[in-house]
Length: 154
Length: 443
Image: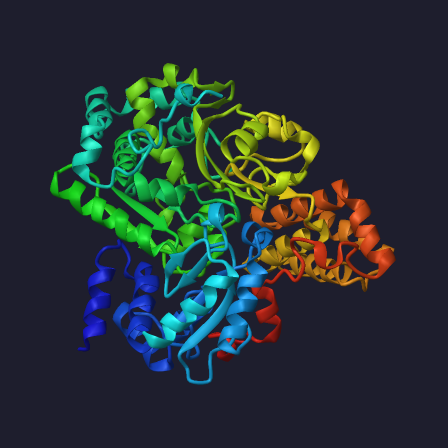
């Protein structure tokens, strides 16, 4: 039995029904694999007593799961209303310029993925940028080169 | 309003910091309400919640005590009884629940335990937005500490979402918590009878639950004297957009938009003119600037044709192109429609497509009428409020700022050109059109 299998079964015990653990289980699998390839979905499915197809259907519904490979680092730039009003488009453009890719793409070396995101819940001081699930705010276009440099080094 | 007179309830004791540590929360009187509620018993505690007229802070504004009273008694219930806390805050403009978890996590835990006592819950679930990793960690640390001090008699399971706005809708949240795609259920039956795992379930927003300890402490009647009739107590108003000092401000309901925006928020930079206000997150219809003296309470905002919703106030100054703003909001609902019911799935796409054409100056006047027509055909015909929110919000932009829509059509583009604060506005929808990252294989 794999370590992942055991971890998932432990999480499943928190819930009255094991299938409730599909989100935490997919998260654990994604932490291990970087994204959710078929073997990850098979492992989750067998630990929870469901099918890989079911797990795939769940994963495709939620923005935080990736069925295809993504960069080692994930940059999500909020572009929703409050951030848009204070210049989110310029922040996103600064990332695109600095990384040489467009939002929705990964750098050719596979290091960094850039996305435009819906409201991240930090509207009071925009633009909100989530980097590997940690928020930075407010981010201004002039902050972007240093952030990218930090990720490239790290 | 004078700073000193302002009642602080939800964030009490954390005015200039946080009460994350149990010791600090205890020093501020924490967990005394839980003891008081235990001594009063479930029935008496429920009466206080009813007397407080505490209305739900998630957006719908349903009276919390009344909702709790719909729950079957333990004798009537054949299944376990659940309490679910909705911490899936994702309404554009809302960031209050995040601050409550960040600064007073124990007040939320205390509120959960009191509410669980009131409804005889067997287990509690906190569904926290997946992106709120830091807040999840803060809440878990507080929970471990509270459990260690024997303060948690009804077990709490913390469940992280994974990025889907729709999971804030209560029945979609239940589906997601059961390990399914977050798609709303048709109602009735209501969760009070058929909820999580088909068991009786009470679902409340973080702020509502975090208010419960203060209601018990002050007593329902005293609580109801704060604020205005039918909108009692304080709320955390999330202030954002074109304002100098954005942030959460806890104020009594009935405070005016002007006080929030100009006294608390310091007004608009550069002395620019206010153009419009979104009163309750992007789902609420926009209000023109002349409504700035309106009272921020459920009924006043509703009479003005909008909703106070989650009390997320977005300030829009004179530089903004309202067509671009409407487009960005339309893109959000298109992106977040769960796809279960046809009017929403198709309607949100049509609305986005027409708005995009208008914004780019490629639309005809007939298409502006078509936009209103599509909004009419979505409104009231969807399984949940998502489609309605899109239809009502977009219709409000056309209603109040029709001249700007017509100018785009007549001039073949944005009359503001590059001077709009929203020029070049971006959206994840752009990526969907190109083939979405991490999901290519799925499409």
